[in-house]
Length: 473
Image 1: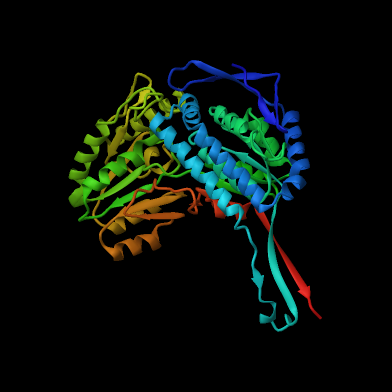
Image 2: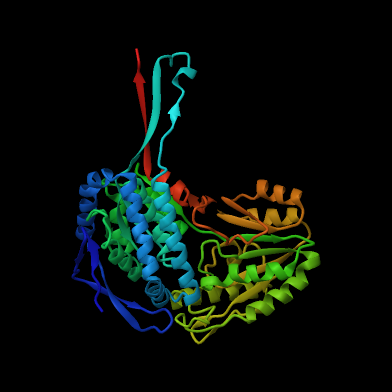
């Protein structure tokens, strides 16, 4: 089926197409338009010309549009999840969970659209501020260029589209090449709302063409990107003075302290390490277990991992399916083999069977090996012994990344110590670092990026604060 891209409230046909393959069955599931630079420029121009119309919408109208999007996802929940499973090989139970989060995300955006306010400035607190009245207002930036990844093709899109609409901006969306169908389905839903035509546009094609055109256009006022550090750094270098929000890589770490209940912790660790084949920005990649619990944890964790159901993403019983493409599976396999050649023990997994990379647990892994120090983005987790929480904190901080980290402990002083000393954007006490709800501030330090997601926080990234001062003399 040949698809069309969506610009100015209309479906446009491209001259060139690329086959889209199912990661699991390898069948061609659609042909996706490959936009030219000129077509991207046209979409940007349309979004730019629509910005004044978008600015005039009231907070009530913007909120109503976002509520309508949420309602349309409620009505089309199964279909939206099936599209995700088909194009991303995300097991249905997780695809349905993503749509539920997407609904919440648009609802949060609707709520925050009504709360977008400035503040009063006490001008007379300054010696020269007498008889002056000051306040700030938050104004939309204009055109937002959104570049999104494959692993959450609806919810991570919602984290860019939702706040952009809430703030009164227009959008040009470039979805990941492997998951354009979800973005095009979103366009079908948005087309049914009262959003002005031209305020939301979806352009599919290569990152080199679509992404670079968005990043370098003077009419695009902000780029919001989720993806790899190398691409994110390239975006920042090309973006000039426009705003840039980057949600980049991670190799999220967890400490398991003494005197905790492993029966409660192990299921969380299995979910954190292996959900969506480990293709999650805050997937549990490094686990540091206090020595006295290490053997018991490995035994329980391995047994639970072996219970995961491997199969088609469209089957409701599947826990694990194929990674996004064969090259990524082979890359992950090579990292495991490198670790094994350097003394790591493969407790379970470490192989590809029937096109699926099996859940993999490694122990005794040196910190300089790729499976530890880089972002593995696969169903692979490192479990190492530590003799103290301090050793675990040092190991987690010994990373180029700093998105989220977690610790399980019953000692409040240890919890406070970790919350202060972890070099990350988010600390999860008595939870895995993979925990996220969509209204919380979300973003990292170091090579994990800049800026914050979470609706309230992203909206403020997408506005400009203007000061107004009245002289009452």
